[in-house]
Image 1 (cartoon, one colour):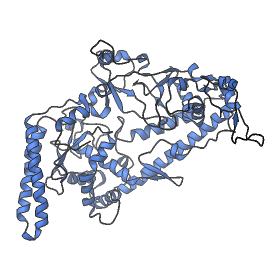
Image 2 (image 1 turned 45 degrees about the vertical axis):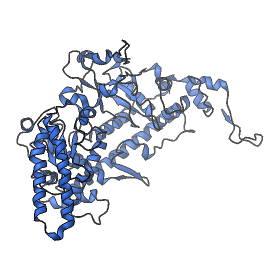
Image 3 (image 1 turned 90 degrees about the horizontal axis):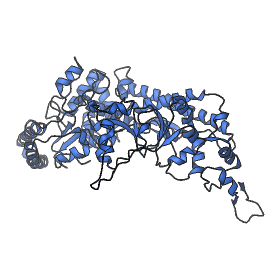
Image 4 (image 1 turned 90 degrees about the vertical axis):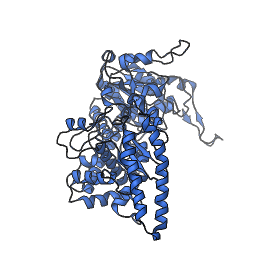
Length: 567
């Protein structure tokens, strides 16, 4: 291909290409911009299909039924370490991790979904329509539970690939490249995460939809590879990305909140600064690794005239929630880190986590305080005893969420620093320092107005803490942890909280003088809202509603329509 932009050519930026050059590229795409050097790469090098078995994954034909976010179901029913299909036969676990593509993410991540593959996927492999035709496509399942490279078939921009350690199935949106040589997987991975890979894939297929055939045709000049030293860089990239993925509670390998992990004093601000220092170093280490890998492969492919190794900071795929890139600098979002800390604190209030023990605690259906005591004896912070935590305008109950949050702060960062830590948290939550009120008011407003919305977003519209709310007036609000819910929960909510609150509001109205007409009116409207809510709550509580975590949030949540906040 040549650029014929000359005085003799009346058409600017005119390119002249030969059909012979197109045939050098597998599939013969009309890539008129491909240089002679790139065309030679396609004709001289092996392709990834010579080294990896590229396969599409299965299709269930009913993802709502067969796929769940991992946090929806109980932990005892998930097998995260399965190594073969044979292990699933007659197994007690119903759910297994599955690679399902996902957003732009390099090296490691997008591990969120589980699939019903009990008894080697019997239900999916026997999912027929009324005419006896198999609806599902359980294809290439012999590659299940093996280490592999995986990528998202559909992207919003650049192609990205990740390393899968095994123990996964994969579906048709999360294709894989497989070989039983794990080192070869890591040798090839940087091709698919580098500028080289994206450059070559743009020539093979200039769309945002990367099929198996596209990736299989990427040329790999293995014979020019001088050593495998770059695998150390690849391992570093994978490890940093995995550590970052697991730092959030939405990972099944999460252990504890980052502000507790980096705690060195009784000041949350110090923990926050420690976090920023550590992850800034990791971010730029990953950035340096990626640029070095680009240099290595640009040299191997002899494309220094066409590509530079520089990686835009925006293309580093860790800390996307926790930091922004501004003027070439990594700027951390204090608000996000504080909200993650608050979310973890709420988890501890319900017993999902504990500051005294890493990892998940109460995560199976119907577990209660007695189960918690067995798992965390002598706990410094006890979960709520009845799985109902009120979120109200004032501290009407001893287990009021702001009261519990203060207690959590005292346990984790000390009573003496409570005031300073509340100030730091409120400062992070306040978009404006003016008119925010006291730290406790700012925190209470966050719980009342924003916590549930943030929780729904964090948990991909499949919340595990359900907000029972009387309506727009926010007269009554309470959180319930779905894994601890039982059919008596609603009755207890009504008698121990809703009716108690109604009586307290009536008493408060009676104590107000005539000069407090506006406040009386506001409280009166709240009482009316509570009375209307009580009629629905009483009806639902008499039904003794059961839930089955295997049905997931979408099925179970609708059973409480009229009582819970909208998702």
